[in-house]
Amino acid sequence: MAPGDNNNNGNGILRSEEWFGPKDLEGFLHRSGLKAQGFSEEAFSGKPVIGIANSWSELTHCNAHLRDLAEYVKRGVVAAGGFPLEFPTISLGEFFLQPTSMLLRNLMSMDVEEMLRGAPLDGVVLLAGCDKTTPAMLMGAASADIPAILVTGGPQLRGNWRGQDLGSCTDCRRYWAELRAGRITQDEYDSMEEAIYRSAGHCMVMGTASTMGGIAEAIGMSLPGGATIPGADSRRRSHSEAAGRQIVKLVEAGIRPSQIMTAAAIDNAIRLLLAVGGSTNAIIHLTAIAGRLGIDLPLSHFDELSRKTPMILNLKPSGEYLMEDLYYAGGIEAVLSRLSSLLNLDEMTVTGKTLGENIANARVDNDRVIRTLEKPLFAEGGIVSLTGSLAPDGAVIKHTAASPELLQHKGRAVVFEDFADLHERIDSDDLDITEDDVMVMKNAGPIGGPGMPEWGMLPLPRKLLRKGVRDMVRISDARMSGTAFGTVVLHVTPEAAIGGPLGLVQNGDMIELDTPNRKLELLVDAAELERRRKAWKAPAAKYDRGYGQMYSQHVLQADGGCDFDFLRGRTPVELRV
Ligand code: FES
Image (tube, rainbow, N blue to C red; front, side):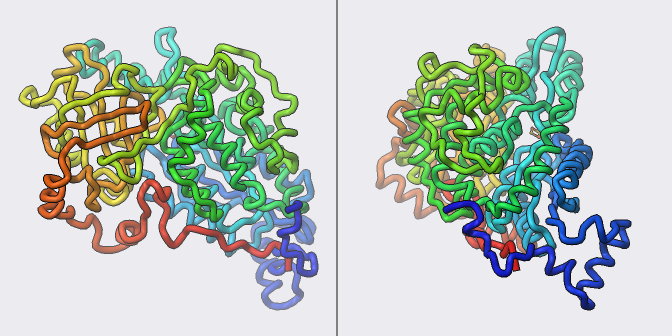
């Protein structure tokens, strides 16, 4: 389909003209609503109206500078002959939301979609950054399907503590384990707080925010540079201005998200995810985005591509470097150029050009950060999927951030019924556990959590930490932060709280993880499992009203992207009247 074909051409008048054009009572009210804010008729009349959907919030520290960036987007919109109108969306900060920001991702996507649908907008620039804000924006824009460009706030500068680089929040977790093991003092740990978080932007390892920023570039929804320019770099502002100028052109061309985020573009995004050792959370978010576009994305497809996509980016938590280093090494464009033989280069992007054209002049300036396909960090992609009797509908493991010697492991299950049980007993000297056991936590999935919190990197028992143990096989239906690491099996589906096999595991059962063969088996005979299934009781419902109840009734499992069943698909807005 050529740009503009899906433009609902009508008589060619922009949809915003329906609000601001007519010389009647409605038009009077709409125009006066702008004039009340000091806009002259010349400022907006006949111009494409560009929304700036801003997830700025002081409750989302990663997005706290988006107010500033919005001014640069506006500058670009005006320079290109458009009329910008900024509006707030809800904002989801990883640090400040209980029980988990994931519970609200779908709510934010609804907020974005319905604002795009209801307001007099011809196009939109989406300002995001922290983990869930990027997928929520893309999901909403996909369903409303009006021209859109995503601009993130960019990553933070490298952390620096006593001369060593620190990555948020991979190194917070690493040193937390050292503190619990008694290897550093509380004062030393406290002194890292301002040393690691020292500038505007989101976490600067290849965590979920960085991964989703990279995916936005690979899928075609961000201008080149969008993922890696640091939040504190002046070029983040000029990038925002460029997005403001470009969205006006995108509106003129009538290029919609559905023409950009095609199945082939989603494959490009998956390739990128795998090649950069990105966050396991991105599997859930990409599945949800694809679902909005009517594209089926089974977990097996990720695995298929993982087997054929070398991991070439050397960033924490799987490697050594940080996002600032990636920017200086050439950014996501450079990674994509190294992957070009594996990509669908003819896919349209928000530049109005193809992905291949966007990366034609990309260059790699540091081969230690961005490896070649011939000399990758790992021969396969960073994430693989598993299936078996413990996870009939799948599970995932970020094997590149795991201990190689544990990737094939058989051990005795040590079971925690839920997160509260884990916290109550994990540091007890009486806990019956050795480093060869397999830690299992139940009831942390989409419904059980609720919201599938990032609890999957289960803390190791203190008594084993003191012995020097730094990794064990851990299994749950939770997610884990993209900044986390270890031999951690996540997203076990179906989850324990709806009666999945995970809910039937008992202390002492044998579990086998066989990552090379993609297997996760509960070694308990079928008759015994059936007996347990009959005795199993669902945990009490977490909510009896409100959003939480709606969430529990409609959320899909991890293999459905944890979207709401009624949100899948799109209802395109008419762009012209
Ligand atoms: Fe926002 Fe890490 S807390 S990206």
